[in-house]
Image 1 (tube, rainbow, N blue to C red):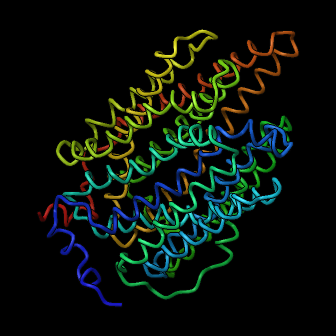
Image 2 (spheres, rainbow, N blue to C red):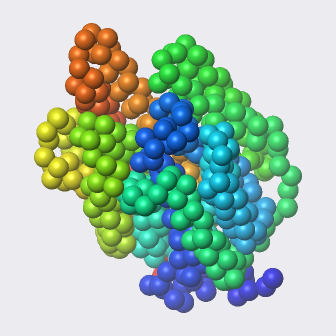
Length: 485
């Protein structure tokens, strides 16, 4: 299938400078819908526990398994995206997602629902790197900040809106509605996408190294699984699984280094030689840990301790999510004009201040304060993510874009899982210790949550330190066509 885009992607995009290419708009929309599902279950937990007769730690698996699958599948996507056409990758991602969503809607048991979530996540795992890689190929350097602002909007607002959207939907029916509502929307987007999407770049042929696939899945998946086991209280088992995961990741890394010599790695680690990319990677991982941890805690606090309904909880966290979304494009434009540091350093400080504020939650903290702290956190994350993604990927040469974005997305999932596991573990351990000492349940839970927020606040100090190491611009290989404008 020949298309003008195939011949010179940079030039055809540059002619409409100032406008987001249609292919990116489509992919952003699709990514938004699939990522929304990562956090859409958080509010439905109490309902699911009652409907399927499962415990809280079992129900938590519906979110953990989603992240686990993403962490296990994404390492393969860098390789996959170089081997298949854009349309093929898109069709694969959306059909997996639709299959999982349809199955979840009719799931008769927890096991089937869990399987459906895993299929959904496999589709989502292809979607994120596909979007990033296509963006880096189609959008000229001078425009990237603005377009990446719209992309960050999809990637960061979707998880933030998940609880709010599900809170509204759950007012009208059971948890099955969450999937029933998403399915037709995703189906229309998939159909529109396949009608309009053109192939970008040429797929390269090559075989997959299955040993790498297995060690990546075992390593990243095992690491996330081990971390999620800490809350069950069996620390020895959890540590064992984490250690096994880390060993598998080490084997995976050694294998990639040897495959690089032959030019056929599953995940090209040469991207890590670019200092700016590596700093961006660390910053993004730590802020993701802090963000997801707090996103888990806040609904728990509002529903279990303040006894708000799912809808009220959703509405309370909605302004923060919306603010984050509306700011994305503005942040992108500011980035194109002033570079990254101006945004990332205040953003990092904002993250730290809001998490420090959350450590002060009480039984009666005014709702406007909670809303304000949450909005500050979301706005600060918006100011941080866009520049970090753009600087990080801009520092990598074009032939490594797909690998750079798949490493970024993999670490994002691992960080999200570490954040969630850390927060839930700290919270339950502290609460259980206090309960067994005779402290009232609500007080014990609240104290556990406070301690968990302290962990988030400590992590955010690392975000501030890393932010100071980032350059204002990515003056590197990927930027040459940007300077030509």
